[in-house]
Image (cartoon, helix red, strand yellow):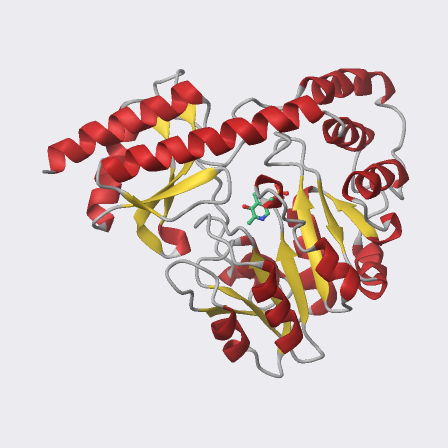
Length: 362
Ligand SMILES: *Cc1c(COP(=O)(O)O)cnc(C)c1O
């Protein structure tokens, strides 16, 4: 008998998330600049903690993550009782959608926002709604105008991926103040550490009942493969998220390595300064070659070409040279390529290939 097993309505409408390409077939010297990974990898202290974690594989991990939460609280001067740790910030995003949005509810985000927002919204049965951006930058008025009585969550990544642009805290405050009382604002701070003097919205969380911040160890700390993220929010929101979180969602290995990474000041300093230096260098080289960029506040640059065809041709030229960058048409930017800031030799290779490609376009 044919089965009649059916998923919940809407599940099969979810477009599968595609990660950045990692390989070029027939080549083992390819350089991956498609997932905003730290070009220096994890720091020495994190690697050491990872090796040590191998001795305790038979032990169940802590369920309350007290050690890592205390370390995060001390490092960022936060109230540790209102921190939650998850399997990447993706898991915190999932909990937020599960906990606060369901069928009939709307989850708002901006035009070129992170694709995990609509994916997680739909997985919870809610309806994702996009508000337009202004010159590839979050438009607070457009977000406020798109809010309805069905809106439950608003996601803003600041800086945003894949655009690299950001809005000032005063704009985020204006958004938080302008939302109706049933709406929770989520500030995704995946790239917050790259912005000097920016707290990712932590002070906004402390001052309000309607703001949550998400953060990750995947970018600056070079731990994307280990899957560790966290969130910070008001107690009433954390009470919800902690009920959705599995008791053993993070392993000892994840917890120990994250804590070690937080204490690796040398690796953090080097990663930040090299990123800032090479990001500006790469943007200058692209601009000189006739490729437009917006000022990026993150660890990647969005290169904008004259057309989708030109972007595709440049992508092919980069691939032919073993360089993998990110095509971002799924983010509504078919004329652009997102390029992770690599180490110096990677940036030089990218600049060289794009320079040569643009020469051929004239
Ligand atoms: C990379 C990224 C994340 C982090 O995801 P993890 O699950 O923590 O690896 C979150 N938000 C945005 C906008 C990102 O680009």
